[in-house]
Length: 395
Image (cartoon, rainbow, N blue to C red; front, side):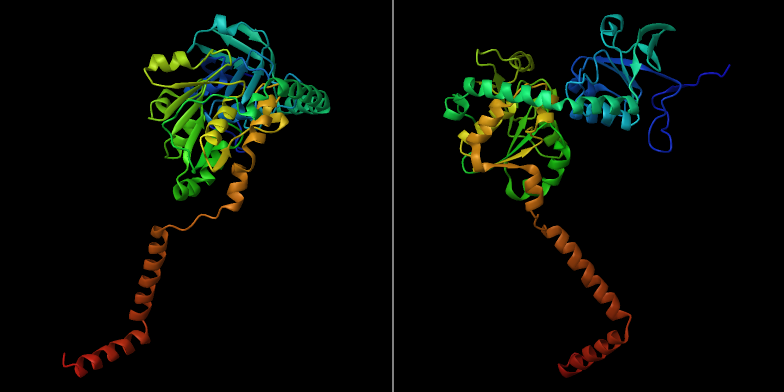
């Protein structure tokens, strides 16, 4: 009988850059029902245990970025509602993805328990505690194609929901949202608004010269604050329900604005009060991204540059939103001052700073001096210099 191999998640990858799927995978279970929070404490030697139906693109990218080798999902990674990209990103990166829908792993496991994943089985101390299906690339691509074939149904439901809620949220277009006074000055300034969304880190990196040269007000929506800090900048304002921003980003000195429901409930209030931080509350029937746009636009910004924003069907379904009424109305209200970061990265040509110019000039001058000193031209110039010295009486 062939002996089954066993390896840790920190083991080297195969030559194609992907971890093989055969054998046993051992690691410490890290449990999290909110994937975006869990990724902040995951390591390559861990097993991520999540409860995330229809893993979205951003969550997939974040999980891969942690280096984790195995993800066990107690929900369906792809429900078939729409062709979500998360499972495809994970499996193509070589992550061992297992679906065990309905498994009680959050009750049976403690964070840090040593577990083994063997194919679709999850074991602790040699006992199988959950069994499901390993999501291979072939299975994920098959399910994605089936979901794509039904996208018309999702689009129709999405459009109907959007039209229904446009009537309920028309105050976003009419300008009836009450905003408090803010410390951040937006008047006649550009604003860079960063959202944790598709490609937000890449877009923000491209815009570094834009931030350096124009010095816009930096506004983050929740976890977008960490992306701004990672680029070496500090946000002026953080807007949202504060569920994905780290404590460090919330304490960075930015003005904090909690997005509340229209009835006044504010999920982020408790966390900020526990941290002892001051904040303002803005109730609105919109997403936190929409509220951030409204604040910047209504307080006088002359340009709003969006990074990581959501505006297509798949992105909204990834966010588990059934419609886009508030975003449609908010963007309609912002008008021509709203620009997508991808457009700016194509149009904006960063000016060269002084330091690069000095380096180039200095290098050229040094090369010229060396060339002159080691050539016949150098000897000729030495002779001319001697003649001048004799003429003026220096020799």
